[in-house]
Length: 412
Image 1 (cartoon, one colour):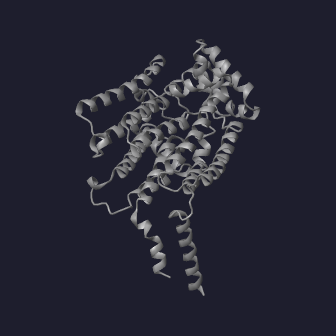
Image 2: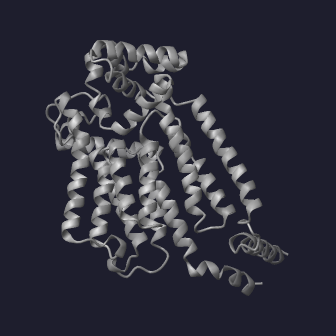
Image 3: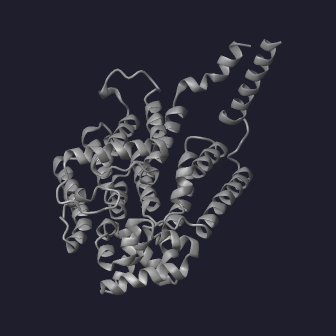
């Protein structure tokens, strides 16, 4: 009896596989695509609408608002008062009270002192593309708080469209839509869509660059997106440098350049970095940025004239433990490891480009954590997304998958 049920279950699974994965049902005809798109974008539209109506109202929105006001108001006290006044008038009272929470030492200090608040701006001014985008929405007529959220909302929408477009190259349209929708409805994506940070914008730019590296190799377009991403988040320079390193030492013919061209690329990479970091010099910070940043590696962002290795290791340990409990970084590494399971790896030189790229992405995350010890999903959205896409590519290119119906049939 049990054996009979088991065989029936295998038959059902085999039939589902034949219908969907082997495309016995044509999900790629125009009518099916229209229906799937309507359902897909209806769900994405609901998330977009909810993100606009119920944003996170995270404290970081205040410095970004201040940087927009700084373009027109040079007086520090005036900029500070206008920032908090705009927040008070345009966000719900309950959310505003959390932002100025007097029981939080840091937030109370920022509310009471314009000088202390101004000293925090170097952490935010190094995201000039996001600040300019916020400024553009503000000038169009949106309130300052709303302007800080709109870049994330639109970036979420663009990622939803782009991920579906990319995945349909490897799967039938139905499966591509299902996987893309599940990704877009995951906790990290839902969270980042509601935040006043450059993280969602950064993820979209990096994902676009990855597309022109992985799926449709066009160096100049990939390079442009990578360069722009540095202006969205300075730490994207790590991914930029790692990918250039991969180009130099990989065997991918589309990215094989002469030594002079490689030197020009590295020079442009350095130019992007210093164009962004030049803005912090007005605050007395080093143009290299990270040597100054290291003195603020604590939860309250207070300055420490001396910072020992012991203090650094304590922060590394504390934030790593916190991240392991509250972020999805372990799932990311698990998916990356699965990309290497397609076939037996007998040597580093035998890794294909996708596997090398996955390895580089893991290295980038480790380096980024060492420079800024924080394991929050919002920083790694682009890396999560490309890992899922690489895993789909690995699965759909696996010949063993095509033998699955035969395995079921042999056991009947």
